[in-house]
Image (cartoon, rainbow, N blue to C red; front, side, top):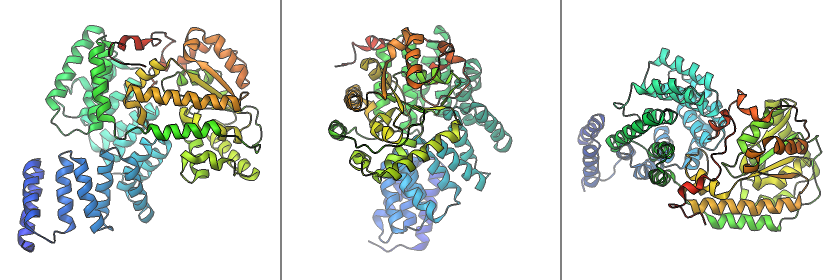
Length: 548
C-alpha cells in the first residue's frame, strides 16, 4: 500500500469536493473510498471528507462512525466535534450530541455554532426557555447567522410566542432575504393563531415546486382546516409531492412529520385505514430508541414498596398545583379552565421537578426514591424555597399550575417539598389515549409512543404508580376523568376549585377565549369550545388496531 503523495492527495481531495458541490454524492463516495483503500496514513481531514459524503447522502449512522474516527484522531478540532454532534442529532441521539457540545462550550463559551446546536438539544429535551437562551447567545455573538435566527423563530412558534416569531421573521426577510423556509415558519405561526386562510396562502404559491419539506408540512397543516372537497384534493397533491421528493435529501424526522400530517388529513377525510397506514409508517421513521419495558417495570416495583419518612417542607396555602397523567388525557383543557379563573398562573410543562430529582439523585432518576428520604430538614426547606422562587419569577403571587404530566413519577418528592400541594390526576379511556398518542408527532422524550401495545403498557404502569401514591397521600390527590369533565364541566371544575382552594365565580366553558400560549400538541383544541367528538374515537380504528 503506497504512502500518500501530497500532490495526489490535494488533487483527489479537490475532485471529491467538486463532486460534492455538484451534489453528485455517489461519485464523491466512489472517489473517496477508492483513495482510502489504496493508501495508508490517511489524515483526519480525509476521514472528515468521507464523513461529509455520507452525511450529505443522509447516511447519518455511517457519517457518525467516520466523524468519530476523525474526532478521536484530532480531539481538539472544533470542526470534527461539531459535525459529529450534528450527525448524532440527525440520528435522534440528542443526548450524545449534548455531551459533546457541552464539552466544547466549557472550553469555548462564545462559539455561535456550539450554542446553536446545543439549543436544539435542550429544546428536544423539553427545556424551551433554555433553548431560547442558548439561541439568543448564539445570535448576539454572530448576528449574521441566519440559521440561528430560523431556529429561534421555530422555537418561538413551538413555545406559543407567535407575534414575536412573526416579528423575527420580518427581520430575517429584511436582513437576509425571503425564502421558502421563512414562508413555512410564518405559515406555522399563522396556523397556531387560528388564521388558517392566511397560513394556507403563505405557502400555497410555493407548492408543488419547492423541495423543502417544511413548506409541504405547513401546506398540509393548513389544509386540515379547509373545506372537505378542497381538503381531499390537497391531500392527493401532498401525497404526489412526497412521492416526487422521496429521494430528495430528507431526514427520518422530516419524513415522519410529513407522514403524521398525511395521517391527520386522511383521518379528517374519514379514510381511517389510510390514516392508520400513515401513522404506522410515521412512527417507524420517528422511533430512534427502543422502549424498555423492563426498566419501567422495575420503577413500578420500587414505587409499590416505597414508604415515606416524616421530613416535610412547610405548607403554603395550596399554592402549588400539579396536573399529572398520560399525554392526550385533557391536561391542557384543565389548565386553561383554571387559568380562566384569574387567580391561577399556567406554567405549561416546566422541568423544575425533574431538575430537583436529577440534583438529589446525581442523575440516577430511576433510583431517586432510595435517596429521597436521605434529605434532612434543612435540605428539604432549601429545595422547596428554590422551587417556589422559580414558580413565582414567572407567575408572581398567583397559584401555580405545573402540568408536566410525567411528574406522576415524582409525587413523593412533590409532597415532601410542598405538603399541601394539590395534585390533579387526569385519566381518560386508555384506548383513546393510545390512539391519540400513536397519531401525534410529539416533541421531547416519548419512547413508549411508537406502538399501541407500548402506549398501553405505559398507561397501565402509570395507573399502578398513581394508585400507590393515592394510598400514601389521599388528601393531596384528586382523580379527574376526561369524559366526565367534557360532559359536566361546571360540576367537575367546581370540585377542582374547592380542592385547590379557589372560588369558581367564572364561566369555565369560556376557556378558549384566553389569549395565552399552549406549547403542547393540544394547541388547536384549547382554542375552540368544548367538544365531545374525541370520546370513543378508538372505535373508528378498532378493525385495524388491537387495543387489548
